[in-house]
Length: 300
Image 1 (cartoon, one colour):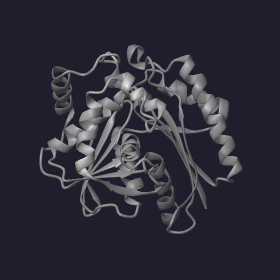
Image 2: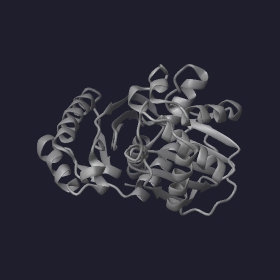
Image 3: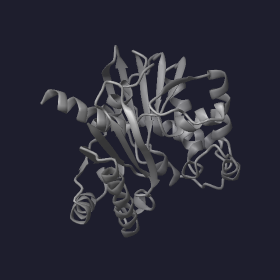
Image 4: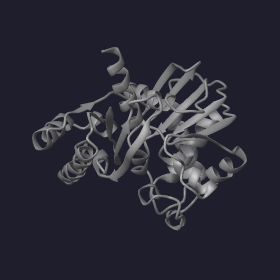
């Protein structure tokens, strides 16, 4: 069976196609495209005509790719920007009318559950810990024990949302950092306690792996990052200038604007929960969509 998952995120749309005929998935295609639903979104709370045009163009390409790989089952979901958009349902209807693609707008809690399903399917995934999925509009935290979810928290502190509160050409000050940490703490619904391991879902965690090891994080992997390298890297990024990030070849262009804010969130989580180990994972919501499809096939 060939399954596909499409994540319509605030910044990017992600496509994953995999052959899930056996217990070991075979990734056939993985693609991420900048669409920018969140560009100027937080000023109007509406998806712009520019973003709608970009979304339709991207999804047309994704459709053609799915046809080329003879996809049997496709699931597409919208996350934070579409959850908050005043014209979210109108946007979803336009996609269906134009492309015959059905997009489900999911809650932050459902998003977190799907991210957990996607990461749980990986080898080397720890039995106990905390998953962090840093998005454009929201950041999901998923606590788990013995490979079962023990708590979910969807925080409205996505990097695109935070970027609107900063001057990208100014270095963060200690006062800025303290203000952001107060915001993070206000959004946090978990009790502050020791959690042994943090598993980062794709996004900036892939970039940290690239910056540390000078190579790409392999598909469908979960790899521990050395704390002695990660912690100084986070501090370096938090207080970096935009011009400095522009010179970092290992950082994808779309992440250079906000990687310092992602680093700040991640450092805050490490300190808040006294994390001892950090894992970088290549999996995310699109993996969870495929895992959910596979579970549905088994139950039918």
